[in-house]
Image 1 (cartoon, rainbow, N blue to C red):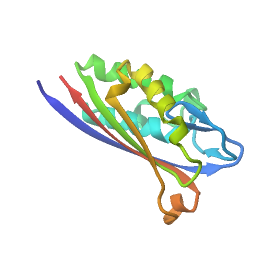
Image 2: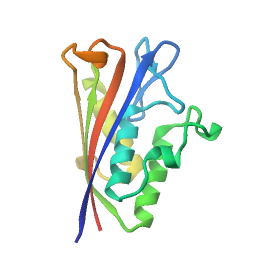
Image 3: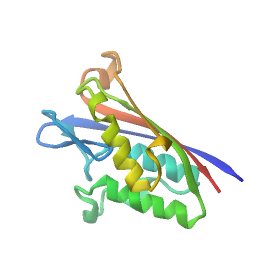
Image 4: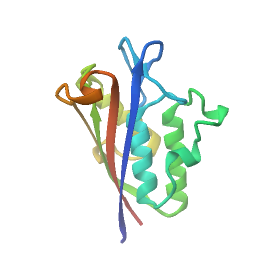
Length: 158
C-alpha cells in the first residue's frame, strides 16, 4: 500500500455583503469571505491538500476564477468533483486534518456540522476528519479580523 500526503492553504478577506461559509456551513456573522465562488477557505484548503497528495494541479486549475460557471459556486459540490478526480486515479482518503484561523466568529459550535458536510461530500466517515479552530492572537491581518485562513493536510492511500 502506498501513502501520499498533501497540504493545502487558503485565505480570504472578510467583507460586508457576503455570507460566511466554512466547510459548507453558513455561519451567522456580519461579514463573509470575498471570492469568486462561495470563498469557503476551509473547503478550498482541503481540496488543495487532496489534489496535492494525488500530485494533481491545484483547485484554480480545475475551477478557475475566470470562469463564470464557478461564480458563487458551492464548494461542497466542487469537493465532490475533487473526490471524483482522486478516485479515478485509484486513491482513497485515509484522513484529513483542517485548522481554521479566525479571530471571530467563534467556530466551535459549528465544527460537528463542518465535519458532517465534508464527510458527506468526500464519502468518508467523520472519524476520518479533524476540524480545529484557532485565533491568530490578534496578530497580523487575520488577528485584526480582516480575513480567515485555513490549513489542511490529507493522507491518501492506493
